[in-house]
Amino acid sequence: QVQLEESGGGLVQAGGSLRLSCAASGRILSINDMGWYRQAPGKQRELVAGITSGGSTNYADSVKGRFTISRDNAKNTVYLQMNSLEPDDTAVYYCVAGVVVVAGTVNSYWGQGTQVTVSS
Image (cartoon, rainbow, N blue to C red; front, side, top):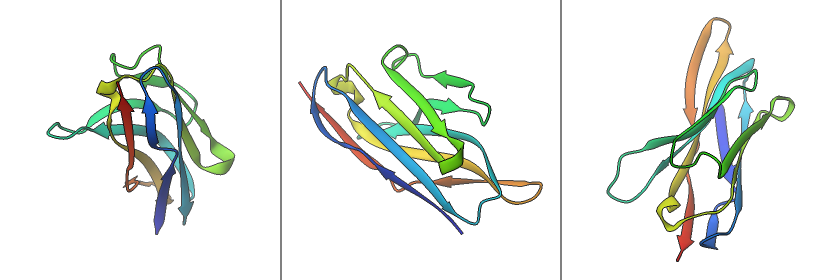
């Protein structure tokens, strides 16, 4: 099986920074796209940022210029550097990875979520 373990969430004041990490482990042949989603209370889960195995990135308009996604393929880890945090960034953040466990098959795996709270 494959596990995704997130870390780095917490409480921060508006204008502050946090760095989230998500490490994949288990039976992994390779990892395709990786990304971060978030879900605020009473709202749907939304894509925050994504990154391909080749390093191409995409971001939600609300975080462009403030958040940076990156990955270390050797460590099967994806990061989310979050700067200039705003109270509206408060949410549970989830990482997701498209993992090749068996050649020719890609399955999506999710982390358990990490809470980010931004105080005003």
